Image (tube, rainbow, N blue to C red; front, top):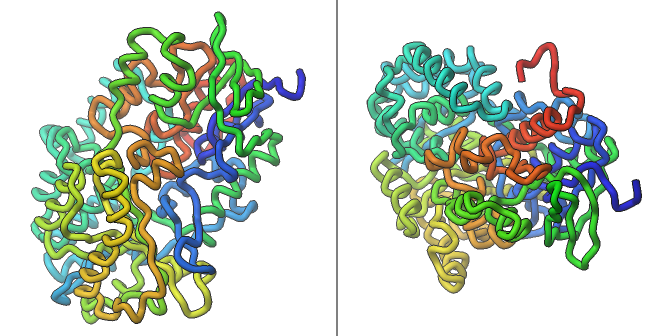
Amino acid sequence: MGSNDFDAIVVGAGHNGMCTAAYLQRAGFKTLLCERRHEEGGGVNTEEPVAPGFYHNMHAQFMEFIDYMPFYWDFELEKLGARMIYPEAQAGITFSDGRPPIVLHRPDLLDRTHESISRYSKADADTFVELKSKTMSIDQMFATNLYSPPMSLEERKQMESMAEGMLPFFGLEPVDMFKSPKVIIDEKFETDELRALLYRICIEWGMPVEQEMGGMSFAFAVLWMTGIWKLSVGGTHTLAKAMKQACLREGVTFRENSRVEKILVDDNGVCGVRIRGGEEFTAKVVATNADVRQVLLDLVGEENLSDTYIRRAKNFRYGPSHVLGTTCLALYEPPDYKSAKWDPEINKCFYTVVGFDSGAEMIRYIRQAYGDMLPDNPGAGTWVNTLWDPTQAPPDRHSLTGWFFFPVAEALSEDEWTDVREHYNEKFLARFREFAPNMTEHNIIGDRLYTPLDMEHKNMMINGDFSNGSFHLDQMGSNRPFPEAYRYATEIKGLYFCGPSAYPGGGITAAPGYNAFKVIAEDYGLEPIWKKKDRPY
C-alpha cells in the first residue's frame, strides 16, 4: 500500500468526521481524513472575534451529550484536555418588569427547580419535577436510540408500539404523539413564564415547537435534554483538539487545507478522492461529513447516480429550524438582572433567556424566524461562560455569547445580512437593558454578530442550518436524509454519510459519526469494538 493508498477516507474533520476516522483506524482500517480548512472541529470552534483574550464559542455551546457519548469515553478525551464543568443552575428566563425568574437546575437538584417554579404554580412544579425524574430514570433508553443506526420500517413500527405503551409513564396519552410540542407544553403547564422558557428550550435542539407529530420531540428536547448541559473548559475548541489528538494517537493521517473536489467512482463503487490541486488518494470506503447536496451532486456527480438519488438530493431541504446567529459581547461585568432580587441564581445561570416577557412573544419570534423574517424582538438565549471558567476572558472581565434564531441565509441578500451584522446587536442591547440595567454602553467593551451567511461560508452549514438538513417529518428518523440512505450507506458501494445530514442530525453528539462507523464495520467485517458490557449501544 503506497503513501496515497488507504482503506478509508473521511471527508471533513467536523466532530462527526473525526469520530468515524478514530474508530475506523482503531478497528484496523488505514484512514485518511481530509479537511478543507486549516483546523478541525467544524462548528466546535472557539475564537476571539471581539477583542484579544475574550473567547467565544462561535457555534456549539452545550456539551449535553458528554455523559453518553461513546467517543468521549472510549478514547479518554478528558486525558487529552477535554474537561467539563457542570453548572448547578442550568436554564433560566428573566423578565423586564423584575418579576421572579424561573430557573431549572440539574437533575440532582430538582428540589431547587421545584422551588423556583412554585413561585408561580405548585402544580406546574410538581408536574415538571415528576416528568423530569421519570425521564432521567430511563435516560439510557434515549441514549441507545441516539447512538444506534435508525431502525428498519418494521422495527420502527414495533418501537412506535412500545413508545405508545410507555406514554402513560410520562402522563401522556396516545393522541399526544400527534400534537405539537407547544400544544403539549400548553396542556401540561399553566404558567405562561414557564411555557415561554420551554418553547425556547425546545427549539434550541432544532425541534420545531409547532410541528405536529411532536410527542417524541417534547420528550427528547424538553424532558431529557433540559438540565444535562455541560461547559467545555477553555471553550469548545478544546473538545475538537482532544478529538484530533485521539485520531492522531490511533494513527489517522490528516490532510488540512485539502478540499475534496471529487469523490472517485468506478464500476465497483468508490475508489478514492481527488483534492484541490489534483492529488488523488485511493480507498475502498469514503465516509463524508458534508451535506447531502454537496456530496451527491457536486462531489459524486449526477452521472454516477440513479434518478431516485438525483431527485432526493435536489429536493433535500435546509432550515428553518436550525438557523442561528451568534452574538458575542466583551463585558466589564456580567448582566445583573432585575429578576435577581427574587432569586440571585438567575445571575449565575448557565443558559439564560432574555428579551421575552411572555409565551406569545416567544412564539411570535419563532414564527418570524421560521417564516423568513428577521425577528422584530431581538431576544436571545445567552451564556456567560466566564462565570465558571475565568480563562475565557482577561482577569475580571467577561465574555457573553448568545444565539438568535434567524431566517435561512438565502432569505436575505448579502447587503441585507451586512446591515444585520452591523445593527442588530444595537437593537438587542437596547432590549437587554430592559432586563439587566447594567448592560449599558459603558459595560460593553465590544461586540460582534455572526450571521447564518457567515456560518454557511465558514462551516459549510448550508443556509446556516447547523443540521445540514431540516427536521421535517420526512427528513427525520428512518427518513434521514432520505429513505434509500437511512442507514448511512448509499447506493454507491463504499460511500457513506457520517455527518449531521444523516440520523440523528445536528448537535455535539458524535452520533452520526459513531453510527456510521458501526454500519461500515458490519459491512466490512471489522471487529465490533464499540461493544461494552456496561453500555447498551
